[in-house]
Amino acid sequence: MSLAPAIELHAVHKTYQLGAHVVKALQGVDLTLQRGELLALTGPSGSGKSTILNLCGLIDHADAGDILLNGVNINEYNETQKTLQRRDTIGFIFQSFNLVPVMTVAENVDYPLFLTGVPAAERRERVAAQLKAVGLHEHAQHLPDALSGGQRQRVAIARALIKRPSLVIADEPTASLDSHTADQVLDLMRERGHAEGVAFIIASHDNRLTSRSDRIVSLLDGRLQ
Image 1: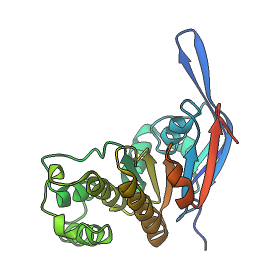
Image 2: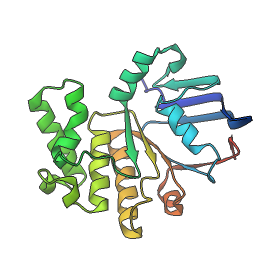
Image 3: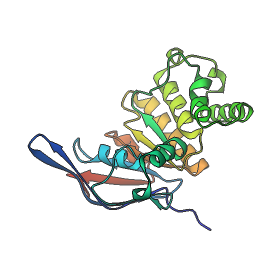
């Protein structure tokens, strides 16, 4: 039996009230992201990219429409269930890495497993395998400040993948990196997504992302183009 798509948006609307103004952030968006697919979400600032990421990450809620995570409509979840879904099935990668500076590379990657109560022996095995997959096994005991920007983003990728999520959400993950390092990071995300069957949705202004994506979706004024 085939697995359900990682995330589906059906006729999704989202508005925000900014003072006396109503901003139509999303206007009837339909989007499906399959497991193992890397999708580039492009568009100018204010087009709705961040809104889509927040909805897919269960950080915000839609005003209308349906969002299905692994085939289940999240409208059926209460806030506790949404929190557990974020913890267990969604990974996040940020522009600023968001690593814990006093933790080693291995401890940063291990932390999501620690939070979910995975036994220590299994955690050590999975962390070692994930660091090897992103080329950082020799840096396991280093602190983040001892790493380059590209290496820190690799740690963030390993941390996002360690809990074996169905979906990883990345917001401008290459904005803080030089051109060569950004290319390497994008290639790594595509490679690991395909290898592990994880869907990546990446919002970015980086034109290099389009050549490394399985699909490109462009937003303008809250609508897919």
